[in-house]
Length: 394
Ligand code: NAD
Image (tube, rainbow, N blue to C red; front, side):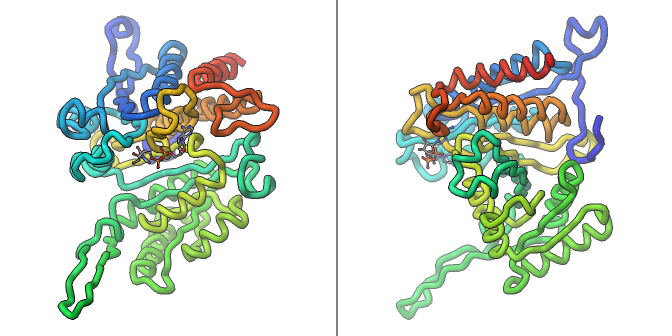
């Protein structure tokens, strides 16, 4: 096992056949395809999981359940208690997408997105990881100049459970003089900054060994605090990693000016929301962007709760047409290989297979360009599995 200390664990369940000879490492996956294009892109990911089960050295035991609008239609809530129990027990959750116009008038507490938020909250997924990788074949498709984004490979780590989105008080008060006052509270405790900083430094050690911490220390107390805690953790535990601090607004500007200067960016919930969307657009279509959300390691098993999902939504405008791009979902499974199962070689294989498929000129409509070959969701899934097989055999 490669020891970067972030997510090391194996979960051994001897199956009947293997028990007689040797035990096979088995990982459990809960698949929650959800709504709209969710099931379509999940179907392609299942092909790849099947390939690894037949050809890899570990087994994935999959269970499938409902989330979002389809869960509301079936159970009256966007995630049932039974599904929550499975999510808390599994090694990793793979989620497609939730939502759609059919549920626009569902109550606030039972809207499809509430299922997603419940999963994130109950699994205590405090770190959101979004890679921004520019595949060479797509460099011409960006709104930025080719030389600015070609070969880009950065990772944005956003604190996901604290900060101004959750801090109290959070109110709109009546001041009694014809005026109202709206209050949101930006609040962070030491442990919240420490744990997200450790994830950033741990991951930087597996990549370019550089962390850029972004906050607003010039105008916010939480910015001063964030800066101090990250600096302390760096000095005490990660002096071998390069650390720089950049003001979050300047960071946004640098992300579009010369994004390749960054390796790992760590930032709070609010700034992370915006900066990760900026980084997302560097690489083109929403259909290309995977993400991971991680929780704290269990003290005994060292296993982190984890959920992997594409950044995109349920795309009702193209659902059912067989034209959705499955790369974000397949890439999310690739992130599970890397961050939950420490299967770095296999994760690299998935990324290389995606790049090779794009190099051959195969494109779903969202990334279509002149001279390329237009294909559908299923053909894209098949092509990527074929490339995985070819690269593994090479
Ligand atoms: P969206 O991401 O679903 O779609 C935005 C645009 O991108 C659409 O034109 C869509 O066709 C396109 N697109 C998205 N994914 C694509 C893919 N894989 N391949 C090709 N094209 C793709 O965002 P939206 O339209 O604002 O929201 C639609 C629904 O999804 C809403 O109900 C929203 O609440 C929900 N939503 C869910 C999530 C989630 O499940 N994590 C995230 C965002 C939005």
